[in-house]
Amino acid sequence: MNANLYALFESRFPEDRTACCIETHEGLYYSWNDVDRASAKMANLLKGLNLEKGARVAVQVEKSPEALILYLATIRAGYVYLPLNVAYRAAEMAYFIDNAQPEVVVCSPQNFGWISQIAFASGTKHVFTLGDDRTGSLLTRAALQSNSFDTAVSAPDDLAAILYTSGTTGRSKGAMLSHENLSSNALVLQEYWRWQPGDVLLHALPLFHVHGLFVASHGALLNGSKMIFLPRFDTAEVLRCLPRASVFMGVPTYYVRLLAEPSFDKELCAGMRLFVSGSAPLLMDTFDQFRERTGRTILERYGMSETTMLVSNPYEGDRIGGTVGLPLPGVSVRVVKGDGTTCGVDEVGDIQVKGPNVFRGYWRMAEKTAEEFTQDGYFKTGDVGKFDARGYLSIIGRSKDLIISGGYNVYPKEVESFIDEMDGVVESAVIGVPHPDFGEAVTAVVVTKTDNALTEQEIIDELRSKIANFKVPKRVFFVHDLPRNTMGKVQKNMLRDQFKSS
Ligand code: MLC
Ligand code: AMP
Image 1 (cartoon, rainbow, N blue to C red):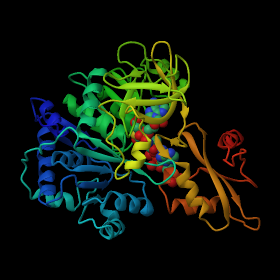
Image 2: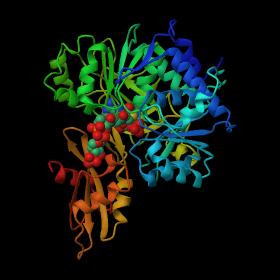
Image 3: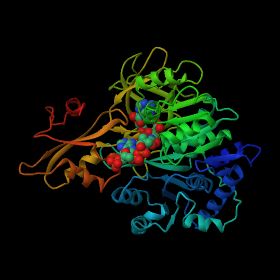
């Protein structure tokens, strides 16, 4: 049997392929036939480039139906999709491209100048452009291709995607996900969340992370369901489209923003069957307010790039606020103490996972991969939590030094290294402090040389020119020394306490 993920989707396309698969906010309709033919054209284009087996196709483009179709075309042709956040700047892109060695890079037309320079310098052979308005060389070239394509035959272990997740100590690591990783998770979620005939997904998430690219899109594709595609999360647009949808997925910030709208009420949600939250902790207050306002209970689930989804509150049965729910069918999740023994009920420890959803390792980092797995094959998530007596998992914290801001991961170490190399800086510590909209806000605490007059704004401006905007600290504070323990380690919890209400 062909384990290619596209073959699975194709086997689930609705009987009527003229039905709508993607509807855009501008009112354009893409039928299932359109998606099939357009992905065939792009797959033919890629195949015609004579790429090697397992070639990476790195993509940094704005969200559009064509961007999703490019993803489908890449896996359909048997290549490996590598999505990159549109916020990444030159230094970040140079690292990813140099590390992943993609044979093809696709970027927005307006970024072609600088990205093609980086790509060609790293040995990439083909750089195409794709705009969010159906423009760019990718589409011009694909238009000349045949609109039928025999989906490549893939083994379950063949790679379908590489998702870069930042490293706690060094640079970003590419999590390698196989066709089986993605298809097993998609199938489990379709059943677990009771996708139904007639469901319509309101898709407002970005297409370069697990949540928007896999969890949301795969659900609709597997179910033969229409997606209403928004280019980004925009509260007014979501409110406008909600009455025509039945499923919505988002990070907690989306729910906070919806609740801030007085017009968001039961009536608008009348046709809604399912609201899913994930990627960051959903506050109890948001969970409760949402239920009160809409009569709907948000279903919170827990996932990560390396594992896609591993735990979820049930569709039927209690969705318990403050917990991420129960391990998904076929996925084994345990909480262990420092000595490796399993924790009892309500005992806090490290969360580990094993199952068909767990990735195939970090791209060209065999040692790092080995470190992140236990001897009996469990992946160490870096999250800390506990199971209650009913088997519901709560995430209590993280053993990894990570900030999650509006659903995006920010690794303090990376931001610190950019601050530390600025003239006049002795050292810095980057922390997350509570933020009403983003959940956590990136905050920098900096020690400068005594005669230095570096200002908060100068540091922010300098960082803005170098790293993705969501990683730039919202505030910068200056101190004489960073608090350290007897081992010399910076005590970030003291800094978090000190600056939490700033
Ligand atoms: C934007 N900004 C952010 C930010 N997003 N700041 C902190 N954190 C964020 N997440 C800042 C920009 O730097 C800019 O600042 C200003 O906000 C306006 O930018 P914008 O792009 O117009 O913002 P907006 O559209 O409002 O975006 C906010 C958001 C977006 C919450 C809608 O960040 C978003 O869609 N997040 C979802 C992330 C996601 O998909 N996560 C899933 C990961 S998968 P300035 O100062 O420059 O103006 C995963 C696994 C799993 O974790 O389990 O799912
Ligand atoms: P990423 O590396 O971007 O895939 O982010 C994965 C991380 O997001 C996980 O390791 C968790 O720390 C966090 N995360 C995902 N879902 C949840 C959730 N529902 N609650 C709390 N944290 C979450």
